[in-house]
Length: 235
Image 1 (cartoon, rainbow, N blue to C red):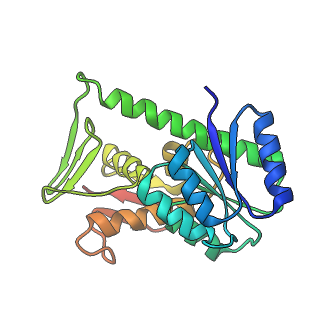
Image 2: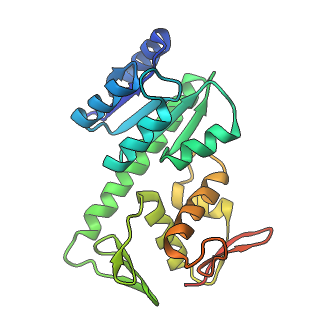
């Protein structure tokens, strides 16, 4: 069954071009020209991927991404006309998985689309395996407990709400306790070798995790920064 992609773009010519090329690759494509319609459509069809422009009428792409991320784990590939670091950081903050600056080639877009869909498939496979009655593993670090079987994390016996990539990053850290991990190594192992992004992605997700698992995120004791290297998980 072909995967479904929701393209949210208010420029008719670009929306048509994106839809045409994605359909040519075998995907089922739905489109929306503004933020409100995008939300309604996403809630209705539960797409496998959201290709989302930032500059939209009604609701901008940042707000759409923020709302979508609270309701579903659909990967989000954001599009912007500005090559601005602030835009990129804000996009990651609201839950985007990847970021593409206009103008871009269709070849680059397709590469990123395939990378995001591949990651989503692998995540579903891991979820399926963890649901198996034979799978069981719990990682405990004082008041922080990671239940691999149930994909749940608790702190002081209270459940933590982690985004899928936050959970994957925390588990990766936990499995490499005490080791210095470079940003590049983390990016490759957690996001995948075919992820097209940079180490800023790792920094943003580490900051999110620290806010949730550290006593004082400004003075982290669990995920410490190794100057000039990367990060080390102390447990």
